[in-house]
Length: 78
Image (cartoon, rainbow, N blue to C red; front, top):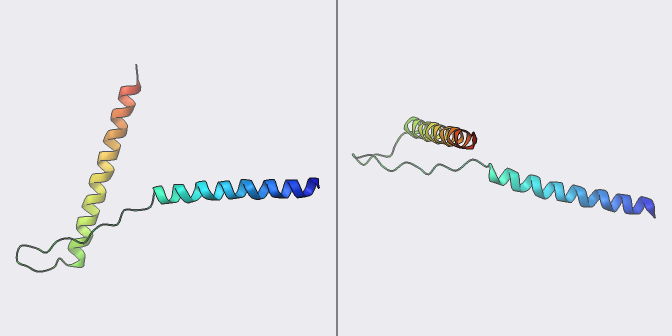
């Protein structure tokens, strides 16, 4: 009986950990970059242009996050 309760308890703990891990992985999933709009001359952007745009967006997002973190750190210090 004691072994059965231990096994059930272990399964409950594993289920809770799995749910938490799933939520965490969904929270940090990379955002899908929408395709870039057509250029002024009506041509669709090339893969290289799309790649540069995605890299630029990632760089801007990272810099903004770092600035926000630095601002929070400086606000929390007395």
